[in-house]
Image (cartoon, rainbow, N blue to C red; front, side):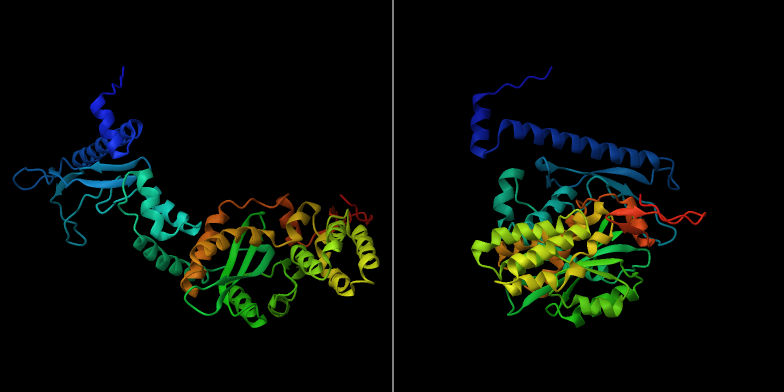
Length: 427
């Protein structure tokens, strides 16, 4: 039975060091378990090669003392460990070099566990300044070793390489049925202009969401979007069935040129904001409710009635506000031609807007990235991190039917005519 006796001396020592007895017990247990695991790993390695001997009958693989003690930062805190050494005299027949033992548990130059290495960039991306790593984590982990700002500097360069590789990958095996597009502007701290990120997120035929492309463009011009779309097409991307985006984008002229068969859906979130800016504050609550009646309608017929009602209520006094709706009815109500389960996904660019909330948080903390390349790389890693949490669209089995050209009326699948020549049936 394990008993913990708190002596006065021990209590005073731990109080001075700022470490609780519970934390000390956890770290001591982690140190003992790590030491035992390293010893077992070496023993297994030596035993596996016990039959290999030299001309004098001596073993070629034997133990050789221990390495110098070092401190390793783990999720349980800082742990001091002395790893055992192995003297491996075997020679690789292919390369002619000496064989070396490499621990899978604790590599030679490891100073922190992989989990800690993963946490650092996440903390940086979500708003913690690199200069704050050591004071913020030292008390929690018991040590500041391996938590310097230079770690993030090296990671930023690595992220830039990963982002460039991502934007040149093959898209031959990727079939995106739906696509959201938007331009996100970020301030660059060390330069005069801003980064304009051209973002494309797609829905694959199985219903999963995936980042298609993220590139640095010149504003949101048609040519910038066209260059990005042509790049995707050269790498094997098929034309999406439907693209969703803001009406002010140069994207629409570009997609008509590169993917002319792709249908267009304007974002209701952006449209509502544009309409409300044309109205006095006293009229905005009623207009907001009237717009919701349009995009939350039972079907396209009811939506068209709501559009007429909106024009009647606001067209006389505020014609500019009404025109933003009535002049683009076809591309505002396009989502009604798809499964009703998908309407909530297709009427806004929310997958992009919600994801980039964390990018804007990072920008407020650091006053923007230091360079355009760093800004694009930071956004790419945030999108990559968020992608793991994206949920599938509702009724994912219907996405493949949309790609196959199935017809939907009032949100329901229209069955093909039967062999007897009967009329189409609505499911």
